[in-house]
Image (cartoon, rainbow, N blue to C red; front, top):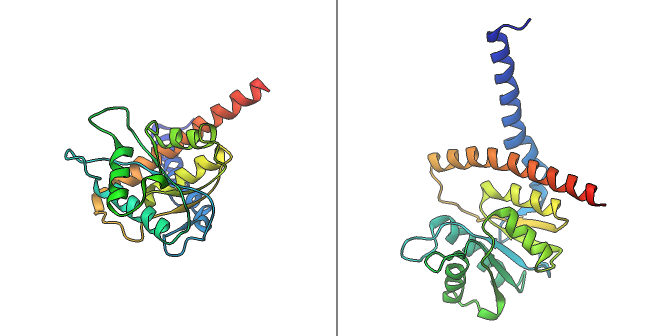
Length: 206
């Protein structure tokens, strides 16, 4: 019979293996699909920029501005001709897509090239709407380095062919990196569970 000490050691070992898999080995399968704006291939697929926090003054937060700059660089390089700005836009007082669009227009991107998706409250919702509302099957996803693997995984789950583009430089301190790693560890497991439940429902309905 296992003693509490041995059981605790076994659980710790399993946890460490899971952390290593989720944050090191699993992301490696996406390495060949992740670029920065300079080395991203040209494509006729639209760009999907995933939202992030907006300041109280209505300006893009640091993370969001880094994503927007990468998306703008892609557009300037004519590596895509449409930008979908997806984020939380449910409130008149807090609207990520509107802030993103205003920033893009201030940088010379024409409004005709911008699509505001105000119902992308989560990464999963953004990808779901991309596939099932906008009927898009190929996309260039622009987001932060810590976030891109989960976004590409969700694209695969929804049957959207995708590559990822991340900012060439991110101004992230140690504590922010640590927080992002912990957040993504739990978020990727949630994504696994939701994808499994979606697949189960699809099989039951077939």
